[in-house]
Length: 211
Image 1 (cartoon, rainbow, N blue to C red):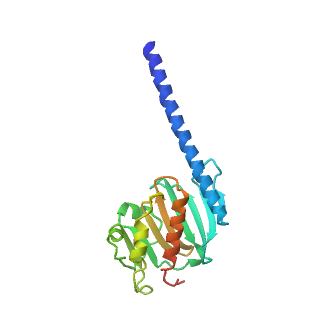
Image 2: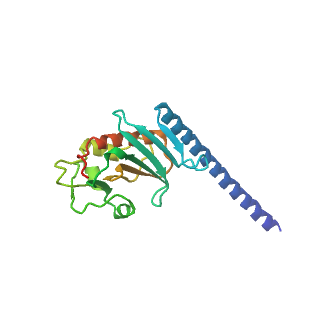
Image 3: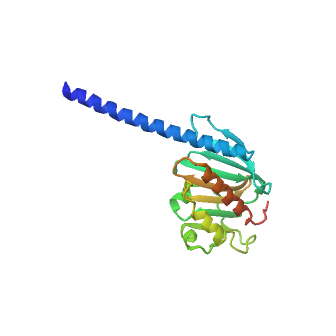
């Protein structure tokens, strides 16, 4: 009987610890969601939670860059990482002519970026970036690397206060220009802000769209 009681007590302790950890994680996710909502409101951007506070990792933000370029930021879960952040610039839509994908075949096969059978690779010139990613573009529309060394460095070196993604991809299709980050955990505002800056800088390097 004493052995049974001991096992029951140990099980109760394990369950209690699990519940406590889950509650702490839930509180942190809600705190991050409030931070993101407050920061979005300060910029007069439209914030909406996908499933309310039951799943704080899922939300959408609609806004504009300082130059007036509209964008949509949407989050979601995926099989390859804990959280996906997809930034879309819908007015930059066009025929698929640019793709930035990781060289890791596992990641490349699991991402939804379009294929470019007639494209060739345009290295950025930054060793760390070129070792991890490849930039494919249509040579008929692009004559110089779409990703400069300075942009490539921003692509691979995220600030310490952000949730560094692995990987980041980018592509253009008929629905817009997309920059997608796969995160190991829920995003904070610093991560969103950095992704927006990265996306805006990439838009400035895009070739003219073809339809």
